[in-house]
Structure formats: structure tokens, C-alpha cells
Length: 329
Length: 285
Image (tube, rainbow over all chains, first blue to last red; front, side, top):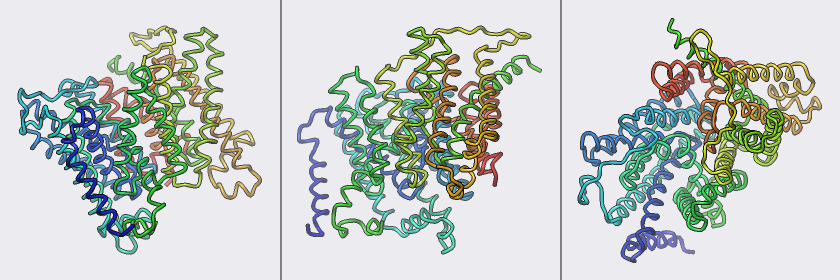
């Protein structure tokens, strides 16, 4: 393969994705692709932290903050999601700083970091449930519908609008991933994940580097959560906050491969297609079948191939096809 | 003092007993093997189903069902170590945590597959005690008593028996213990089985108070981890004390606001305390 091959493959893939809605797929197919793009974006956001050893089990909190802020501002104040979503993202960033700064400053790492973020996810979920008068509690809430499709409300009957929004979001996510991967910060963060003390000793500002990548990751997750809420028009604390969804994010990203740009997206394809396929084959009598298989796969993945599917495939290719940083690993 | 507040305090104390038992098992495994079993509460769920099916459905004697639940979950603990932890003992700690996270998904979904999402009750109604206008659940009282007894038994085992001493020694220095002729592999297996047995015991106590369903682990799993960390991961006495602190926060918060706010408070206190004392309130620095 020539060194240009990945670029050409990427362009061809993009052309197919851009033309997809006109290849007359069923509405169901498009629905699945949109879900994959949105979750792929969210998983990519998580992997920005995960690949540097910042294993957050609390991304559900950012997801919920983004989705619920936008949804509630729309329902109660009538504020357009174009403003509501940025406010939700800003709130998520604020939460990320409030939790992240002391964590990084006081060197809360490893298990402890994972458990602090897990507590954060539960705080988000329980707060939403506790505020049931305005959030609908565990029953969830539905953003007020508009009679006609509207850009102001970001509500469309035609799924193609969402398709392009999701596609744009996903591409943006990949772009951010590349930017981070190619930056000096990436090298610094890698040094930190190897040995925090040594990294600090050679002049790396540990807290600032970690906080930057955490803010980026939290903001993207909130953005993804808000768009997901707009798309499915239903918000639920169990699917958008709490430990359950936080673990779902972690595992999809790991299964796909958190060290590669497309890994988290592959994780989204894998998990969503698996769930849908099992649902269609077995119907509702076999609820849980998808996640049972998924759970076994996860254990096997972490034991035998911690770099995920894409990581495993990439290791079979000659080194020059990989991004600079991965060659070293 | 408000009698209902006293009641809330007392119920918090009783809740603390079961939480302490849970934290104890998790702490033992962490202290000795240096692994966080994130699926620990799901093992408890399995034990609850054992009691439900044997006692609630097939009407075996309750005591027999309870013993089988404890033994069954102890065996499950052995399997968890042998199949999941042992192959990756040398990998980064976070990988082990995540691998047992896969187990969490598996157990939850497998239970859903087998039993559906119904809430199942073993159909045993224990009386509510009325003491000075306060109602105290008898089930909670039993749970508290058994939990304290269990903790005491574990303490005696760890401090008096040879095996217990070896377990404590390995928690302190895993390299030297090998040189002293202690078989690490065997100690790890025994510890995992004891950890499992404690989860099974907690299951027997919880099933008296709560309906069992596949996602029950999520409702007390996170709080158990917080308790272990607060007590200082691996520090069993600290974990015991932290269990009561957390359960009182939940009860008092629940009394003044709502159950969820009580739990939110507990988690917020946890996060704040981690920043003040990262090694836990009772942890060695």
C-alpha cells in the first residue's frame, strides 16, 4: 500500500457517508446510522481522556447535564436549543473543572479517580431523579414538540437533517481527536500517564494538561448528549446519567480501541449493531441477550486485547501507516 | 429531640450494618489482591436470586437456602478470581477494575435473560417493631446483628488463625510473604472465596428487606465503593466505621429531604472528603 492509501480510503468513505441518505435506505437504517454517529462522537470524546490513563466512570454526568439543560430550558423558558445546548456544555465544563481541578491538583489517580467520577455520575442521576417535579424523575421527560419541523427547535420529521447534523458532529469529533493527538499536549499527557512525578520534574504542568483534555472531553460529551436528546426526543436519567451509561461509554470505547482515531466509532458500530441484531433475531423475549454476549466480550477484550479491535487490526499493518504517536507504543 | 429523627438515626445505624458487611468483603479483596471488583454488588444480586428461588419459589428451608447462597457466591468469587483476575494480575490496576466491569454487564444481563426484569419478593414478611412510637424493621435488626457477627468472625479469623495471618501478611508485603513459604495463589483463592461468602451473606440479609431484580446491584454498589475508599481501601476497621457514617448521612438526608437527596449528599461528602484526605478518613497516609 502506498502512503496515500489511508487518505484515499478516508475520502471514499466520506463520499459514501455524504451520499448515504440518497441511496434510499429505510428510515430505520438511517436511524441506526445516526445513533452510531452520535454515540461514536461521545465515545471518541471519552477516549480523549481514557487513552491517557484518565479512566472516567462519570461521563454520564456530562451527558445528562448537556441533554437536560437544553431540554429544560426549551420546555420551561422556550429557549432555543441553539442557546440551550451551549449553556449545557458550559455547565458540563464547569462541573468538569470543579471535580477535575482538585483531583489533578491532589493527585487523585487510578482507582481513586475512577471512583470519584463514578460518584459524580451517581450525583447527576440522583439529582435528576430527586428533582422529579421539573425533570419527570425516573419516568423521564419529553421536550415539547413543535407542530412543523423547525431549525429553531432542532426538530425535524425528516431524519436526513439529523443525519447531517450527526455526521458533522462526528467528523468534528475526529478532527478534535487528531488535533489533540498531534499536539504537544498529547506527548506531555503520555509522559504523565507513564510517570506523573517524572513528567512534573521535566517541567510538564501536570494539572493544566490533564484539565485541558478533561474540559475538551466533557464539553464534547455534553454536546453529544444534547444532540442525542434532540434526536430521540426523550430524556431519562438512567440512559443519560448514572453508572450504567457511564460504563457503557467506557466499554464501547475500549472494545473498539481507545488508542486509535476510529476505535471508539468501531465500538459504537459493534455495540449498536449487536444490540439491534439480537433484538431483531430474538425479539423481546430475549432481552438481555445482547448485553450478556457484550459482557463476555468485554472481559475477553480486556484480558486478551486491551487495545481493542482497531488496535489489534492496526498492529498487523506496517508501522508507517500508523500515526506517529502510536508507533512508539 | 424529634422522635422521627431518632427513628431515622436508628434506621441509618441498622442500614450501616449491611453496608459494613459489603464493604468488608470488598475491602478484604482490595487489601489482599489489590483489585477492585466493580461487580461486587452483582455477586450479591446472584446470592439474592439463589435465596429467592430456593426459599421463595421451591420452599426449601430458609436456613438451607441461605447456606447455599453463601456457598454459591463464595464459589462464584473463586471463579471470578480464577477466570478474570488471575490472567491479568500483572496488568495495570485499572484493567482489572474494567474487566470486572465486563462481569457486571454480564451478570446483569444474564439475570435479565433468565429471570426478566420483574421485581421478585421472597414472600417473607417480618414484623415491624414498635418501640416508643418508633417503627423499627425487624429484618433490618436481624441484618444488623448478623452483619456485626460476621464482621467479628472475620476479625477473629484474620487475627487468630494461621491462614488469616498469611492473608494479612500478603496485604502488607506481597514479595516477602512468598519467601516465607506462603503460597500466594492459594491465599488469593481463599481471599476471593471469603469475599464471595461475605457477598452471599449480605445477599441473605438484603433479600429480607428488598425485592430482587437484575439491576439491584446498581442501587447499593456505588455506595459500597465510596465506603471502602472513605475507610481507606484495604483498611477493614476504617471501612466498618465509614459504613455507619455514610448510612447516617443517607438516613438523615432522607429524613429532611428525600431518599435521593440523602444519597446525593453521601456522594458529595465522599467527593469532598477525597479531596481533603485522598487516602480515606481512616487510611494510612
